[in-house]
Amino acid sequence: MTSETVTPPKRAARVPETATGRVRQARRIYRRLVEQYPYARAELDFESPLELLVATILSAQTTDVGVNKVTPVLFRRYPDAAALASAEPSEMEEILRPTGFYRAKTRSVIKLGQELVERFDGEVPGKLADLVTLPGVGRKTANVVLGNAFGVPGITVDTHFGRLARRFGWTTSTDPVAVEAEVGEMFPRKDWTMLSHVVVFHGRRICHARKPACGVCPVAQWCPSFGDGETDPDKARAMLKYELAAPKGGEAPVPLLVDGGVPDASFSTGHRGTPVVPRHSGAGAQGEAR
Image (cartoon, rainbow, N blue to C red; front, side, top):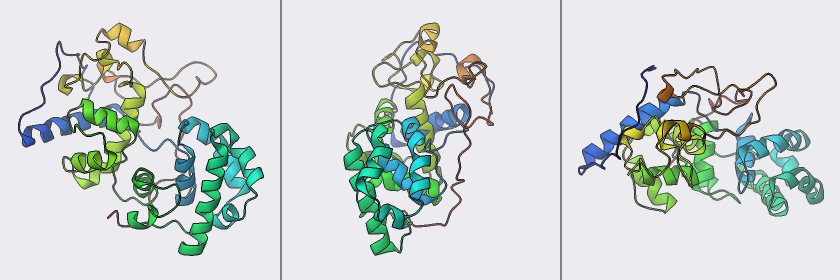
């Protein structure tokens, strides 16, 4: 862990002309993001592959924080695939209402339960080829489940990951499958899941969609897009956003490397808020990603 203060550069970095140079630059960015976010993880709370799969489906068009508020009630009422399959739609809709698009999500979750019961004995499969055949499950959701519930490395290309991959010069593609393939070639397979986590954490906290906080970015010296956002450190620091409400007694943000801080790995979130320890370790049965 480094305690070196990161000084924002005066200009954007260049994208190396050679493939080897691009890989080296990309891996420097990854290593620094791991230093900034050693606690990075899936921010959906879960205790089993089924819970993570359902929570990921529910996270469409809403926040992970919002999903975490409804899933404890949902999983107490419907603890397994069979219970989901036989759920009364109107009852589930009331539980899922706060997540938005609750009628469509209810249909997807019930159909998911039915498919799991009929085709996989009520268990979530640990293979990408099987997961993507389930209702509401694409490659992104499948990689979330494989990487975090089964320990199978995968790159999760959501809107944050795709945006940052382009800003970092790792790809020019907007197609998630192409982004996954191109970025995957730049990193060892064992790093894919953590890569997804730290890039998404960075996208949510500092490298915002409309105006990134460049002046407090720990990877600014390697970023070809430095300067697209606010470069003044004080103004950039004021832009930082966190997703949980401050706990009683004050705020507890994790120190930024740009301030010479050493992130405390005891924190499991980078938000202002009470640190949340994942309810599932991700040390489940091994499966095949491809």
